[in-house]
Length: 345
Image (cartoon, rainbow, N blue to C red; front, side, top):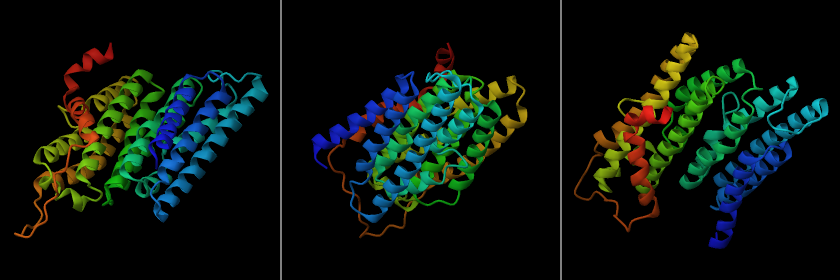
């Protein structure tokens, strides 16, 4: 793809998300979501193979269906209340439709089936965009409508997502599919706390975006597309593999790393609200996710593949742009826990 076209697509992608996040009218929010979807389809289809085309088609169908449901829910609300204001969604059918549509947009259980398949058919960079930037617009709509959406439904969606996100990742060997299920599990945590305390949800989203970007940068640098590829990543850079291990443990939510902070605060808030069974279920579901993070960490740093004199080492080529992002993002992903009191102010 030529640089000018790629620049136009990326700027359209960014503009679509910003329009949705800053709009007060349902029609503008829908236009932003459509811009966002239509901009990423050509980026996904850049590699001319059947898997990429299939992934782009699946992504387009799910996102277009979800956008249509959002438009339909806003039309029902406008028909019954006479207003198109995003924060004034008072019709019950509109609430239900919006919850289902946003769950489909984000890839929450039970509307999650498209996410692992789409990520597996995309390149690593496109997969990174899908599980980070593409989550911002739907999360913004959830934030704006949090007073109108059902708390019970949101907590149920969150619990199911955290359980299935952990369970689904256990059997995977492809790093992109593992990251897809990781994304589903993390979004489950965010949706669970969204109706109780929105500032914790936003903080969790920011930390998740930073940690996922840092880990994807290291996977892109080491060209690790399967678990087997991670076993030879040490030949590229031992420092990179050590950083990957700590990032994986941080994503798993182990103290004293950054990933522990949102889990700690969410569990604390759920216990304060006397939702102890919910908190217990979330904590247990984290163990499922932690298993596949630990498995990746083990193969990356503690396993040496069988080596002979003729073993092919990976060439250490010139520094890639991803390496520049990785240093600050990895630092934040590992060392932010002591700053928790400052972030709660």
